[in-house]
Every structure is written in structure tokens, then in C-alpha cells.
Length: 279
Image (cartoon, rainbow, N blue to C red):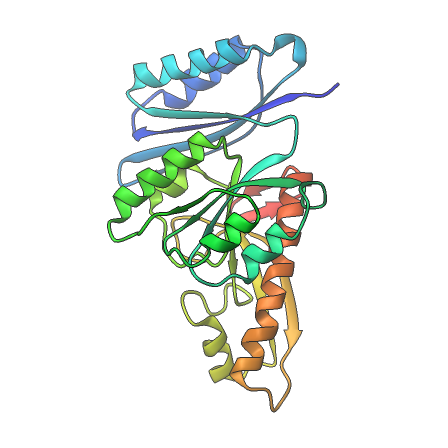
């Protein structure tokens, strides 16, 4: 029997009794709690909870109202996301590099396992590529990060997005943004993390003379390039190979790794415990 699935995110000032209130509500609504993760950072509480219902107990409106009522009583922000019955809806965030976006758009929704519905860029460079794929493109400069993130969050709600891929998106997202999409933002980084985090990873690897390089698809967390790893790909560096060649081959690898990570994400229910992904 197919189950109805939902992810509930609760964010606000830390206080006693939050977990008890939300779990008691879900028990009353006939839910089975499948996973729960919470954290407190500088007095800010965030919780992500996955719940399921058998069809006979599932009431979309009642669940939504119940969660919102509890959040209002606790003076917290709540977001509830119901898993779609069809392909998951994907938002793609970009800057200037096109290779990962091209790889995602080249796949059909059936082969990818997800349907791209919107492209958002902090630069306008890739607007023509999105429009050729008949996708809406929004240019949102990140000069004021807080304002920009609010605009992005509004677009994610408008297009009923299920998860996000950072396709070489070269801006750091704030904890407030990441908490609202915990374990639903996939990033691609051009190194075998935890080695060479941050910018210029290929150059760092080249200058260190590594013999094997790679790329890492991982969930985004508030800590830069330290999120749980979903997939990795590797290639051997030739002894006389120059940086330009390494970058070119690495970009091909990035696209392949992102595609594998997306397929893994949409076809398996990934659990994250203590910073590790289990499928």
C-alpha cells in the first residue's frame, strides 16, 4: 500500500516542549514518524521531521492546519511539504558556468527522475539556455543576500519546488535559507571532499600535485562544503597534464556526478545521520 509522505520544518527561538508538541500532534493525526533531526545554534531552534500516513488516515487540509496551529502557538515558522505522486519538481540555481545546467536539461523527466520547473541565477548569463528549454528564468542579484534569499524562497513556493540543485551556483546560502530546505539542496563541488573546500578547488589540487582528483555531490549545510556526501566521481591526473585540461575533464565529471546524485535522491529515500548519507 502506497504511503503519503511529508516533510515538516520548524524554525524559531529555542524553548521547552517543542518536540513534544509536534510529535503529539502527528500521533493524533495518525502519522508514523520516520525520521527526525533537530539542532540549536545560538538560541535558534530548527527541526526537520519526516512523517508518513496510510491513505485512509491521510487528510491534507487537516494536517496542514494542525501543523500551522501548533507553530503559531509556539511562535515559530512551520513549513510542510507533501511529497508529490508524480516526478519531483526541481529548481536549479546557477551563476555563469553552463555545463551542469546543460546536463540536467538534456535529460527527460523520466530518465532524470525529476522535472526542472525554474532556473534562478545571480547573474543573467544562462537565461537563454533556460528559455531554450522553455523554463522560466529569474535573475536575482545577491548584492543584498537577505533580500535575495527571500525572493528565491518566494519563487520556490510559487513553483511548488520539491528540491534544489546548485549547478555551479557561486554564492553562499545563509543558515536561515539552508534550515528551511534541510537535506533538499544538492551542491556539486570540484574536489573529493573533505579535501580542497571553498573556491579554486581544481587549482588547489593542481598546485598540490595530486594524482587523483574528483568531484563531490553533497547536501548543503550552513558549514561550507561540509554537508553529507551523496555521490563522488574520480579521474587520474596525467603526469604532464595542465590545469586547463584538468578543469575541462573535471567539468564533465561534475555533470555526471550531479546526475547520479539526483537519480539517487529521487529514487531512494536517503537518511542522514550524524553527517552521513544512508540509502
